[in-house]
Image (cartoon, rainbow, N blue to C red; front, top):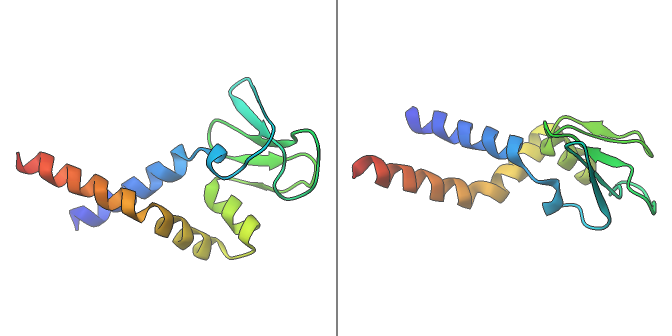
Length: 109
């Protein structure tokens, strides 16, 4: 049971700390703690897609918005939030396994 809780905590941490630069390429601009990107949902030349320090995001061009990377994947892939969460977990599963292994080895020592 303890390991399940640890896994959930690691997933939540990865969601909160996710860097949108890993999934959005192109022109960026940082200002006051937030980062602006060229929106991946519509064509534009100047950044209008804003990612705030808390991980929430909003595009002032197409008006799409969300609270985290899971909402972003939901919109980008055209799938439900639960399927987006599953996709995210599949992507980070190797890192989570590695982190749990390190914690276990640390506790044994």
